[in-house]
Length: 255
Image 1: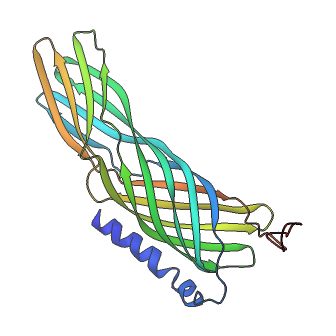
Image 2 (image 1 turned 120 degrees about the vertical axis):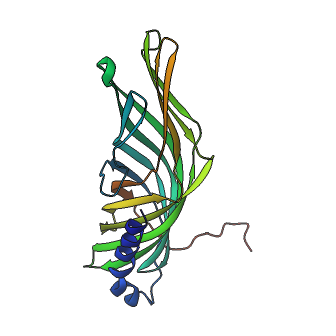
Image 3 (image 1 turned 180 degrees about the vertical axis):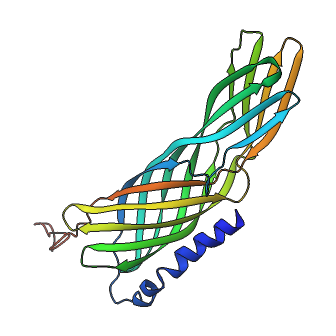
């Protein structure tokens, strides 16, 4: 994870260096409000990799599945080529669990999801490619809130039961965010953005346990979910309109 973090920081800081040199700018950027949607892609090279945990004759494999994030975004212009981006998002992470008890020739599969709320603060640097096309990259952090623990039970009334439980490490945690993307700006239709981003939690997000129960026997295995994720990013910013003319027109009572 540390190597990945350094790679992302290198990508964010080095690529837009030319944009930083251009940004000592005479023109201040506008502020924008928009919306974003991010499918969370289960890429094991950067995100959570499948892993096995077991106890005695009982084994489990936990794998990340496709999730999503959506929410509102506020972009605060500093200069023409620098900005701060924040907002609030709802995130849903999904995982699949494959259970196996080889001695009894038993196998089963289940799924689990957990949610969190994300408040990021990212520093953006733009590179102007043309009048309407820009490349941007960002680096920042997020405050994450986890509202609850999660639990699933497979075959709850049967003799053989499989249980998967996830407990948050704390109510709040922090992530490191990195992002690279491109946007198309139009005065009338707004800003259309597509990119990719990565998030690396500073601490594991869930302490997990998988359990197999048979009659009076019970086998429990423990591990943690690190929570690293990769996403595609789609954003749309509402057009910025400037009011022309006098802001307040005097009436008959104005002297």
